Amino acid sequence: MAHALKDGDVLVIPCSGIGKVHGLIGREATYKVMDDLASENTATLCLALLVKGDPEAVAAVQSHRCITIDGCAKACAQKNVEMSGGRAAKAIQVAEAFRNFRGAKPGTATALTEDGWKITEAIAQSVHCEAAELHELEGTVR
Ligand code: SF4
Image 1 (tube, rainbow, N blue to C red):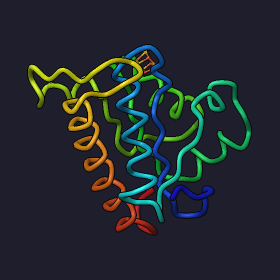
Image 2 (cartoon, rainbow, N blue to C red):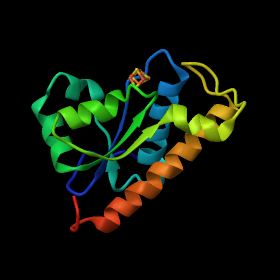
Image 3 (cartoon, rainbow, N blue to C red):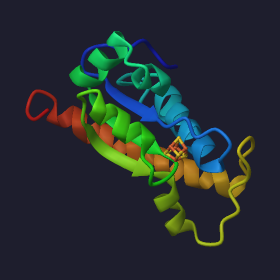
């Protein structure tokens, strides 16, 4: 179950990506990490808050380690974290993850197929591993 942001959490921030299956995969991977794989030490925030300069959201990315999940190379989540004074410790692009699933038919902007869920799972596992490594580094390098 997702929880409110607390000290030491890793922020997992997907792009908005409405209208593309890539965006849906990024959001579903985020939910899988937060609700299942790493529910105790990850949180997320709405990218739109960063885009409009919301002070709480800006402070959150400046004070927490961040992993961004972007649908494509435009990297809206990564760029907005960085423009807000944060740093993406890991920047994932769903389009790149597709390279490991050649020929996959992931579904649409509103519904994933079995292939789409496989890609989602792979991305979520990657984020989970990265978040675990960041927690091991907690108190060392930020
Ligand atoms: S990174 Fe790509 S898919 Fe995501 S919001 Fe930006 S343009 Fe859309």
